[in-house]
Image (cartoon, rainbow, N blue to C red; front, side):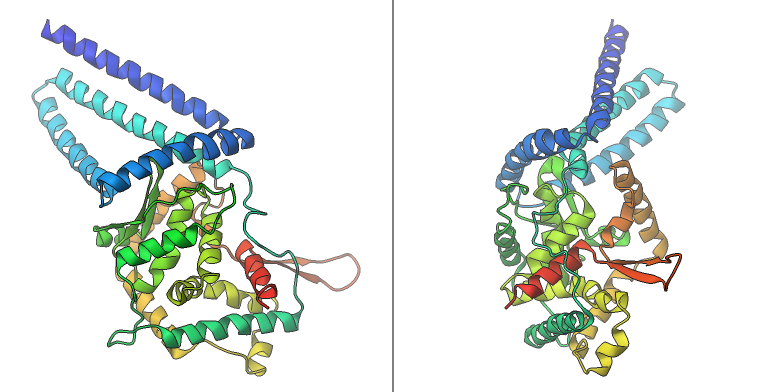
Length: 389
């Protein structure tokens, strides 16, 4: 009698797993439909779910529930594996099968929930028109003046930043104060393209473990949380928070989240937030010179270059993020790349690199033509400069 109940229990679990798998396959089959992705899931189901669950988590868990659940899941899986090995050596196949069926059902339930709340957002409408950008291509002099404008502001901010005894920028705010500031900053995104709900970014204590795998932030839609690693350098926090909060507001594509982060930080009136934006986007600013072969001419004109204070911060940041073995970081990048490609992002982890490009056209008659294509962030920077007065 007990054996029959056990078999019936396993059968019910397998049926449940089959239903969950069928739903995952069905949702995966329709998630490339742009209308369904945008209006049914991203603006509908996902937005409502994250609003409800995010508020509950903010109310009940001042810590990262995602981190707690992940830790618990890892422990449960390890215990289960050990238990299965023991049961199999005892030839208690029924008990081992029951445990495996339970775990399979739980894993498929999480995958289904993630598919419904996050995966569709990778296939939503373009962000074009929802963040101010310019399609204008400035002439050489205008490009150099614009880069000089940004680097001059960057240098001026560097002079104002509080620094430790080693000359490295430190945050003028506590973590909670900065989190509240970034929530207010994100509320400037009042376009309906963005979810009106902004969760409070939560700090994860397992910073070293995350940092080893090259991860400093995770936005996990099933828990409605934006999670920030404690391993993040202080002056990198505002830009990272903006990136992860962009995910929570329905912006799942990494290139779009980078654009939102750049826009929020570089248009902020808060000097520490804006400094973080420059730290994160200086390479994209300077690349507008390299794209147009203007580096030498820019330097000859005596335009602004990065101050030693900024270089000091970069040196510290590279040292902090580079202290783990490359192989561990490569493993993390490998799985992140697979995840992004399965989500429909063809570039994989390359989608983080929101940079411009050059195309050389060779017409049948006449000299070759160099066509510059600016990235979305560079187009945003052009618009900001044009409207800065």
